[in-house]
Image (cartoon, rainbow, N blue to C red):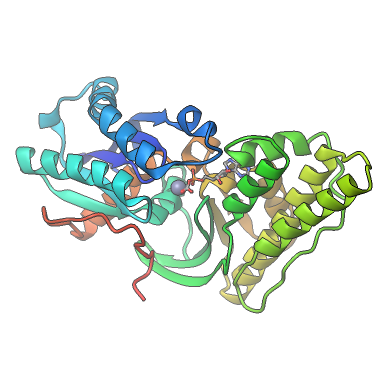
Length: 336
Ligand code: KG4
Ligand code: ZN
């Protein structure tokens, strides 16, 4: 029997619903982005996001079912992102999922948003070889995770200050490239010289990261040139900044793969859509005989299909949620 799961994701600024069969076949993956709404504020405004999720959620769920050619009665389970994320935004998805589970009397599955990002990889490659090293790089997280089996995670390191995506967004703002910053920086960087400016790389001991010093260095560089009345080559700044982020991410990820004897590495989260990061990691990993996998860009950024995939494996383990489920804005991937 095939398991059809309706998945809902509302942790930040995308209202998304998907129908995924057996953690593999995506029958629909509706993503209604609020980016245009938040752009004029230069970032996500939590209260605005919650209101928009409320407005959109029922339409997005109906659309996901319609595109999948299914009715509510065809579903075997309903999955939802429980956290981490913005509490008001998460609550909209959690309330909708609980109502559906209650009305249809089907299992409710609570998914950690970061676990969802990780499972975007299994949507594409269900046969990934364990143990895996996963670099989770999003707007809110920069985590190195050792995955021994499905659902078995060890957090090796994370950022001590800004997340990688946050650094992209903040630097894009000072370069006046708009929001979200990652894709804008990647695009501009293609026209620049990534060796032009030697921005600092923070190589902390162990597997932790730090990006706030790099962000400050970019700001100081711009101020210095502007004070001297010199023209700034924005493409060179974007390319050199991107290279500095990528170098540290790749160094640490390979170091983790060596330490834990992992032949395969996976990328997850919005920043995993970055072409420079993908190509640098692939070519350096290849020299060590390691393989790198990553989802297509649309599955790297927030979407419900990844939640539906993670939910399937939780469903198989019997890891179901009660109808008293609540949103947890600071939900960790691994319980401390
Ligand atoms: O995973 P995601 O969609 O949302 C969170 O869970 O945070 O990640 C969003 C982040 C933003 O910071 C955005 O600037 C970054 O991912 N991002 C990128 C690219 N596409 C999205 N960063 C670098 N290069 C990209 N192509
Ligand atoms: Zn995300």
